[in-house]
Amino acid sequence: MKEIMGTDNSQKMGNQIEQNKKRNVKCKGIPMRHTAKVPPEIGNLTKLQELYIGYYNNYKGRIPPEIGNLSSLVRLDAANCELSGEIPPEIGKLKKLDTLFLQVNGLTGSLTVKLGSLVSLKSMDVRFRRRL
Image (cartoon, rainbow, N blue to C red; front, side, top):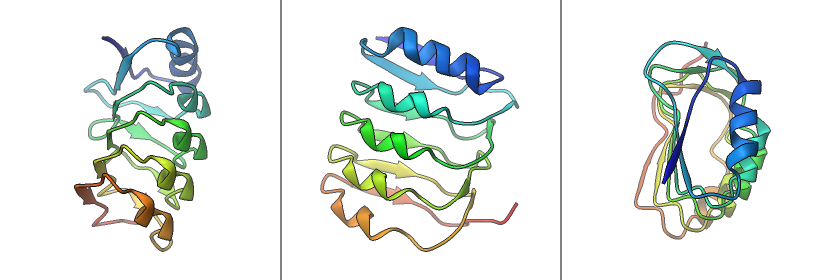
């Protein structure tokens, strides 16, 4: 299984995603401080099973709604990486998702009722939503 490592800008990460969208890949952030946006191209990785972009990485901006296209996603860990905005309702389309970690971010608004559609969800943490 190939891994796509986070990069120091979202365009570079988007290019890596486009090159690997038909393969089984894991997407991990690299353990160093950098700032980027989660690119909308992430939604093209429909075979992606695990997405770890949290901790030590600063992904400014919102979670792109294209995240809802990741129909094979089982784990999403985007904790403590300075995301902002609301949790997109498209996350509710991730029927295989069993782990959702979004804690310690700048997320705002109410939790979307679409989270109730996550029939495989076993572990979720969205606490400590902080203002940036």
